[in-house]
Amino acid sequence: MLPLLLSSSCSKVGEGVFGSTPLLVDYVDVHQGTWDAEHSEEIFPIVQLPHSLLRIIPFKESLRSARIKGLPLYTPDIDGRPLFYLIPESAHANQDPSGRLSFDFQEITPYSYHLYLDELQVNVDFSLTSMSGLYDLSSRDYNGSDAHQLSLYIDRRDSTTWEQVADDALTAEVSYGGTTPTRIYLYLQLNTNIEQMTSAISPRDTTYECLTLRLQKPNKRIVAKYGISLISCEQAKRNLTTQIQSFEYAPLVKAARNEWQKSLRKVEVSGGTEVNMRKFYTALYRSHLWPVSISEDGRYYSPIDDSVHSDEGITQYSQDDLSYTYETNYPLLMLYEPDMMHEVIVSYLRAIRDSGGRLLKTLDLGSVIYTEESPLLFLLTDALAKGLLDEDIRQAFEVLRTAIDADPERRSGYKLWCLSQLANSLGYTALAREYSELSDTYVPVAGRLSAQQVASILEHPSDSAPILLPEGQINIDSLFSSSLHSLNVNPDLFAFLFTYNLMGRPHYAQKFVRHTIDYFFGVGSFGYPGPDDYGSLSASLVFAMMGLYPVAPGINGYSIVAPSFNEINVDMGGGRHLTIKAQGASQVNKYISDLTLGGRPHTVYWVKHSQIAGGGTISMFLSDADN
Picture 1 (cartoon, rainbow, N blue to C red):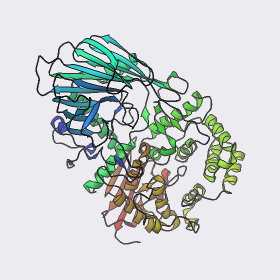
Picture 2: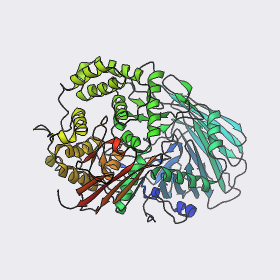
Picture 3: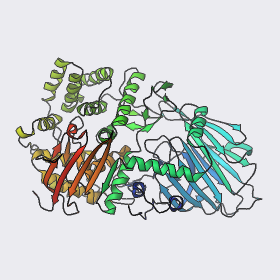
Picture 4: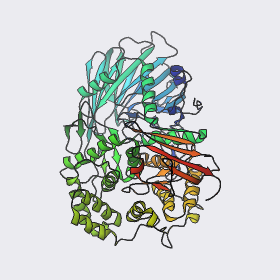
C-alpha cells in the first residue's frame, strides 16, 4: 500500500470522501514547480482531468496572496485569468469592499479545489469532468433571514451575451482569443431558483460584466453546476446533463480522482524514494494536461475556418504547441497511448486541410499560428519510424517540402533527412534519395548527434565505432559548473546527456542524467529548474526517471540509463506491457553493470522501439562503480 503523502496537494476533504486508501494520484503535488526560476515568474497550479478542455486555476494576484478574486469556472490559459467566475455574496458586514475574498484551508489536487472563505463563513468544494464542473458552497454560520445571492462575472473584453433560460439556469457566451476568436459557451444551473437577475459593469474590474443572481430561497447549501462548449449553449447544456446528473459533490470528486488514477496507472513504479515518487507522478500528471480534447458528441469547432465539423469518430485535439511537444510529450504517448497519438496526428492533418494547405505551429482555441517550417515534420517522421503512421500524409508532405524548399537558408540536415524518410514511405524513391544526399552536406547541430548518425548506429550497432562530438563543442564538465540560473534544463539538455551512450561514454550519460534528476528537480514551488512549456519538461523528466530517452525524434529507438526505481511497468495497451527492472537501484547505484533484453544479454545502451513495441522486459543490475 502506498503511503499517504502529507503535502499541500493532499485534500483533507478527500480524506473524508475516500477514507485513508491512497492512490498514485496522491503523489501528485500541483504546487511543484510553480515558480519558474529561469524567468522569475509564478505558474499557478491547475485543476483539470487528463487532456480535458475544462480547467480552473486559482484566481489570485499571486501564489502567496491570502485573498482570491473569485471562484473560476473556466480558465483557458495558464495566465490564470478566467472567462467566468463566481462570488458568493453575503450580508456579513466584514466582507472586503474591494471584492477580494479572504480564505483559509486551501487544498488543491489535480481533480479538486477546496477552501474556506473565512469572512463569508462559506466552505467551497469544487470538482469537474472533461467539460463540466460543480461548486458546492456551504455556509457554516447560516441565518435563514440572510439575503443570499450569487454573482457571476463574465469576461467582456470582446463580445459578451447572457440570458436566463429557466427558473434555475442561465446561459452566457464569450468571444475569446486573438487572430481567430473562439466563442466559449456556458450553461449554469443552480440547486435553487433565481428570483431576480441584474447586470452591471463590475466596479472591481471593468473588463468583466457582473450578473447578480438573487436567490429565491436562500439556504445553507448553494450548488452551482455548469457545462462549457465551443459549439453552442445547447451543447454546453448537453455536456452538463451527460456528465453531471446530480448536485452531489462526493460522487463527482470520487469519479474525477479515479480518472486521474486510471491515467497515471499507465506507468506504475515501485522501489523508489517518496521524493522520487512525488517527482515522477507530478511530472506524469503535468505531461497529461495538453493537448485537450475538443470533440463534443462527435463534433468539434475549428477556429481555422470558423466551422463545426464531424470528428468522424476520431477525437479532435487542440491547445498544443509542437515546437515544445514534439520532442518528448508525443514520444511518451507513442510509447503507451498509440491510439491517442493517431488522433493527434489526424488533428493536425485536418488543420492543414481546413486551412487550405497551410502549415500550423499550434492548434489553439483562440488563435492559430502559422509557420514556414513546422515541427509537424519531426512528429510525422517520428511516428513513421515507430510504425505508427497509418494516415494519408500526401497533402501534408507537399506542404512541408514546399515550405522548406522555398527558403534554402532555413534548411537543416535534420529537416532534409526527415523529408527523405517521408518521401520514401510515400514511394517517392528518387526524391527520397535527393533529400538524403543533400542532408549529408549539412554540419550536425553542436552538442547533438545528427539524426543520420543515430539512425546508422541503431541500424548497424556492431559495425559502428563510437562517434565523438567535434572539438570545441559543448563540454560536459563546464556545463555542470554553471549555476541554476545559467544552466538551461530542457528536453534538449536531456537528449544531449543521453546521447553520450552513443558516443562510447555511457558513464557520462549515467552520471549526469541522475545528477540532473537529483539536483535540479525537487518538490515544492522551486521543484523545476525552468519553464514546463506544455508539459514538455515534465515529459522529459518522466523519460529520464524511467531510464529511457528518445534522443532524436524520427529515430526508432531510446537511449538507456539506470532508472530511478527498482521496477517500472508500462501499460502499452492491448495486453502489452513493458517492464523495466533495475536490481540494486538506489541513490548511489546508478551505473549499469549488466543489461538484458527479453532475457538475452544486451551489450548496447539503447533499444529500438520495434524491440519493445510488443512489450517485454529490460533488466539490469546496478552498482556504484563506473563500468
